[in-house]
Length: 146
Image 1: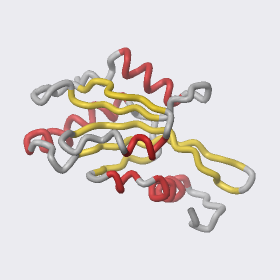
Image 2 (image 1 turned 180 degrees about the horizontal axis):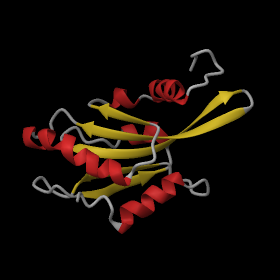
Image 3 (image 1 turned 30 degrees about the vertical axis):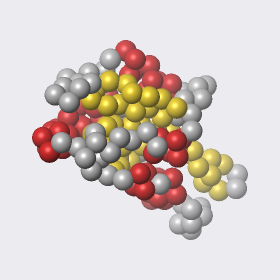
């Protein structure tokens, strides 16, 4: 296993999912360059904007984030996004293993509407993510507008 089922990761996952907590994202990184186990690197309350600043361009990392957006003038939706980050400086062997290891992490952080493969902070732009969530969610009362 990837270590994604450790107590601190599960507690952070529960915090992100909770309506009573301010925490809205978590970030997992590999414990070391040679390890296949992940560890909780950070959590935060600043959403996708804050999370995008935490990705390391030399690493593969995993993130889980709560995204809230207005569905119409009367309501908001809460959705969850799983992100697989592979920075441009990630070692070749790590990149090759991520496709298999991401499945282990995804099995633990399993409640999400979409999964995003990111290589650049622009890949986790909030407007783009919300647009994808709207498409994945079915009804769009804004006619496709962000």
